[in-house]
Amino acid sequence: MDVQQSETRQERRQQKLKNDKEKVKGEKRSGKKKKKLRVKLIPIWLRIIIVFVLIVLFFFIGTMIGYGVIGEGEAFDVFKPSTWTHITDIIDKGTPSEAE
View 1 (cartoon, helix red, strand yellow):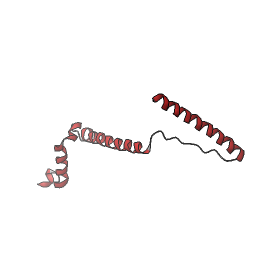
View 2 (cartoon, rainbow, N blue to C red):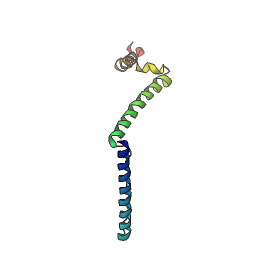
View 3 (cartoon, rainbow, N blue to C red):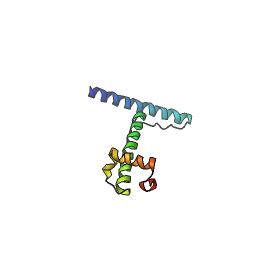
View 4 (cartoon, rainbow, N blue to C red):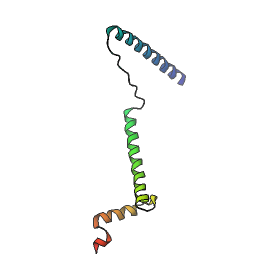
């Protein structure tokens, strides 16, 4: 089945090239400019998924760098719920020195 698919793909490519050559000849005679064909290798739905995955990946990398390097904590501690509980407590109630 793969051989048949590749042959039909090859046939389609050859037919497309033949059609493109005929269009170019016709356009040269009529004086029209050739329109450049753009082949999309990655479909739009796959591009959206890739962008979403990269956003999530870089979010986690950024939090690890922010907590581990800038905050001088252990980088993987950012994934512990206790860390986020502590952060939300600070945001809601302020720092311990402000509470006194």
